[in-house]
Image 1 (cartoon, rainbow, N blue to C red):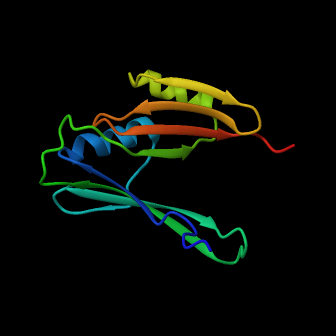
Image 2: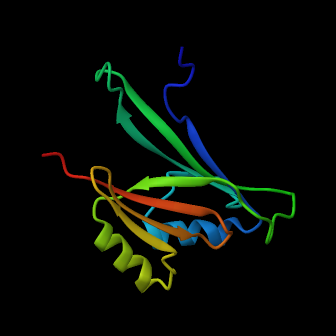
Amino acid sequence: MSLINGIGGVFLFTNNPKRLIEWYRDCLGIVPEGQDSECNSVYTSFEYRDLENPEIKRTTAWAIMSTDQDITDKPRTGRINYCVKSMAETLSHLQSKGVAIDKTEDYEGYGKFAWVTDPDGNKIELWEPSKSD
């Protein structure tokens, strides 16, 4: 029995929300839908359809939130996988922003992958799915 049917949200905690918000906006094009008045947290959402029942619309929340704990230079253990439309275009854009590409890989049947790290040390996996035949 599966108790999980998707990801409800992704929450990144930081000591410097403004810097991280700008990085995700400038490097990955994620533009927040809303934010609090002090810019301590922002959010956006990604919509998709349920595979078994396409009439059902679902969303995944994505947020950057300030934390009172000092997490500067502390190791991060998670990784977020973002689907991209074009790996070549995405990597070119990231490199133009001075972002180091940690690794790239092409997995037959699955697609193209690349890995980068945001300014707070969060690991990011980019994925361009294989084109369906």
